[in-house]
Image 1 (tube, rainbow, N blue to C red):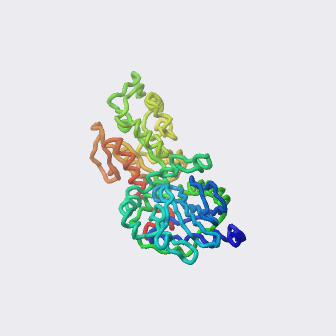
Image 2 (tube, one colour):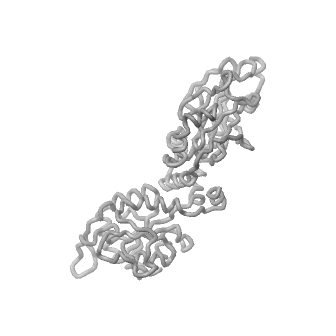
Image 3 (tube, one colour):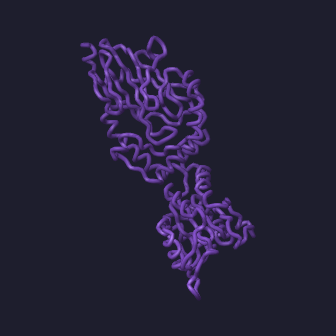
Length: 413
């Protein structure tokens, strides 16, 4: 043990750091690796496991990735056990919450000198000693994870950083994280190679301070990186409210009460839960909409209310849509990242199309024409039930072009 005792922790960690091999289509690579050296038994500072050296020392490597194909934030582990002479005698690694022995030849994985060679699952980064075994035993699961299940957990919450309050998550950040991972879906090749450059190796204490700041920074950058809808404009009559149930104040156009269309409450709640910015864009007296929407608890679901009585113009006037863009903090340059949902081809659809806003026709009522009278009234999309709207919006977002040159390059790769 005397020889090993003279080696500094940093030098020992650098000497035995694992050689990680990644699928050639892997979109997410390690950002930093934190090390902890155990020369006596102890509790891991970065995992749930107790560490017991095998006669010499155990080097724990905590490998941080910004992304796993299922969620933002990923922390994997490798444990390299050395004996008193400094020889590697055992290697273990994380695999979906488990600590698994990495064994291939003579009780060890492949070795590059004194460094173990491990293979990271495509997209998921759990470790294997044998890539052929990985493909045979987990290939179908990994294909599913990298395709249909991409982004299903959004921002990761099942870790001690989040549980300790080191970072928080807003609904929009969850949605944008999910969109990014869905956009990064890929078919694993199961062809592995070593990185040309390796992630920085730092003491665990440094990585522990770094990770929550990094997660917060990645989340903050999603709005600029991920193509998404920046606002949803919604009409009210025969879009959220059944105009056939309206009761008006006698002698006026002010509606006192009305019933909601099936799915209105649940749909608005789903859009809010997804972090969408919602703007009411409606023709009529302000009192009408405050009466109806307050009655049903929907007024406060909107970030702004753009009403013709206040604006001094009716849809399809561009003034209504420009006012709504301004209320959302946007301009005409952002129009392609906005959609208008309405039941009126002449007002809602033609007005949105006229300023470059995406248009969604809610074909629900027979009170107005469902047949476009001109090309300007042709909607981009049609729904027949409000429950269809959240899924349609997700499809629209996934089809948006990249916001950055880097994003364009990834999409074309």
